[in-house]
Image 1 (cartoon, rainbow, N blue to C red):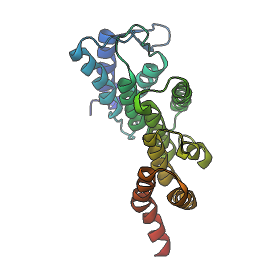
Image 2 (image 1 turned 180 degrees about the vertical axis):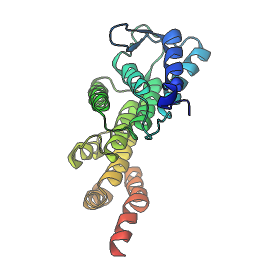
Image 3 (image 1 turned 90 degrees about the horizontal axis):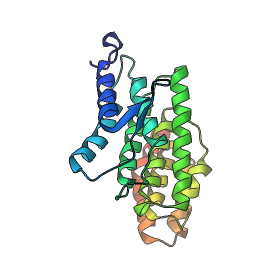
Image 4 (image 1 turned 90 degrees about the vertical axis):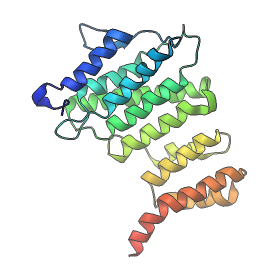
Length: 231
């Protein structure tokens, strides 16, 4: 594998170096790659820009973890993202970066540097969740990606948010796709505690579409552990 330590993680290095040459600058002191301000005028460059984070997120070392260089790049893409001079919205780009983060951090090895990167990633996700309250993206797509990334990280023990953190986003007033994403995360992380919460939604929510979505989530996620307990 090109992400093996015996090859000095050449796969991750080459992809990060390519991104640095085409879309950013490398900080000589910290080694971080700082992306240039977004410019989506050239479609070919745009698709390459969003493909590199997705490519580095699936790299794995001999322990099944994503190489540190790849994780650092993904965190930097959120931390230094600048869309101030771009004629186009960057919400779809951010969603794809966050989806890449969810995949990369879902198999992170527990190392000191890894823990630092996890904390940095959680800080960035929290920042974007706050920004969504002030300047929401189209269909709250960024908030949906934040919830799914947090759910993926918590599923492997990289964070430990209580049920109430996600339950807040089930409430009427949030965009329906945000509510559905929160329901999926709750069912995945809290299958037993989710049942009374979902029953209340089924009988008390004003949105028929959301009630149907909750029913589907109950059937797909919650029923499996309940059957296992009965057996």
